[in-house]
Length: 223
Length: 223
DNA sequence: TCGCGTTCGTTAGAAGCTATAACGAGAGTG
DNA sequence: CACTCTCGTTATAGCTTCTAACGAACGCGA
Image (cartoon, rainbow over all chains, first blue to last red; front, side, top):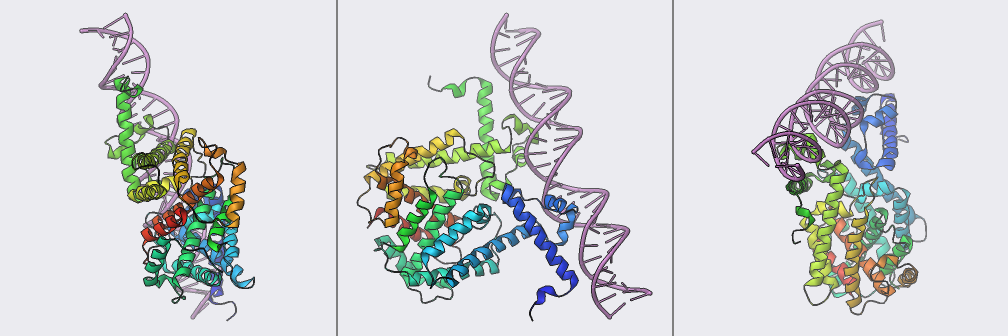
């Protein structure tokens, strides 16, 4: 046990090491020019080897990008888990600020997860697993959340709808419908504020996105 | 007058006609494979002429895409204006549903406007003008909106912040702060729900995005 | 109606990309 | 020590954007 199957043979060790370095260079390149401009050729040259060598490590460009998306999901889920593990009990505000911190830390990484979807792309199983892992933390925080604003009639209707379709709640099959709706509102509202901020739709407006974010957060945690 | 400067010379007429056909084919291609896969070469071949011919009509790929973004903005602004012009007075619910209809009509067009930003891209003047044209319609609807939920403390703080920085309100320099905040919440919340829906983050959850959208709309228009 | 200039579409080509194929050299295994 | 599997190489096909140079056609003024 200990260093598990990851460190089997020296070959495997080296292989993993190169894959990591490729991904590292890929992140650098994405940070500069976005994911659509990611070039395997450029990465290879940057690592001192010639183009097609990288195809020993990644079947194609899409596989590399999928790997990057997976890592991005993983880092966000870890950030969530850290928040849940740290302070006394889960807290929606802490989760929200961790989300914003994570997004501002690397906007391109954020857009890799929540931006324009790649046409043919379908998330593999393990990525949806990470997503539901995050949802689980979020539902815990929702359950622990205090009193919340009186829901509008449409919100009540949505909660009724949710009561019948909670398969996505994963390990929280008994979560009350208001909690499910709160979790979804958390997700959509904060993502709305964040993605518009990061896409630059507020630039030139002279408003502070942090305050807008806090305002939207306030609409979730109640007064 | 009448047919204005657009129909000056026969040459100019033909030129505009070709430009329109190029954009038409571009939309077809985007609808199939997304904007990142848009190929000038493929469009040219589809129109029966050889690659570089298109460079007589568009300086480069970016100029074509910018034009498409402009048209996309224009069509959304028109959809907003139609709603405002039609029924008796502006209505937030009608605007919201027009927004969702517009988005579902062509998700790729939606992402062209609100999706992952192109790294080097900066919106030209006339596009920001269209954006503030929409904001004006939205602010009218906010002013006409009925009683709204009691704002959370963070929302009050944000309104105070907005009171000092309302330059973006354009032709509504005297809009009250609660209206400004409502307009921004409209924008961010509905965009949050829409973009997650269109990006497919709800697929497999078995929930009805229309009801989620209505629920979020309910949070804006009050009970 | 005739010429002349502008504009258009062409082909050729450079530079870049993804991706495959075939080959040589090395490393680890039995 | 030899054998095999893996790695990195070069060559190549096919795609892309975009520039350059050439010929033809179109339309405007005379």
